[in-house]
Length: 118
Image (cartoon, rainbow, N blue to C red; front, side, top):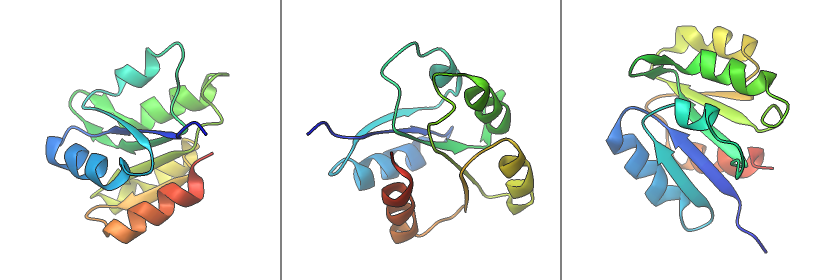
């Protein structure tokens, strides 16, 4: 059986490393500090996207909106995470599936990934 793929995008390398370590036993994990990596993909899309809102020079909400407008990526579940809880409403309007407040509990992250991955 093919392993599910999770893409984690955050400008904090430490968070990328933690997410990779936590998830790589069960999933193929791809990480990036740039949201454009997702927008430029033409194939081999992830089964779930974990996306930070505040990225260097990029807006996670705008990236989410672009992904949800694209026929090839609109069905991929997106979990936005941020330390700023006031952006939860904007994230939901962008069509994301879930908002996860930073700092998050490891068990919460694992449960959310398991529940939302296609």
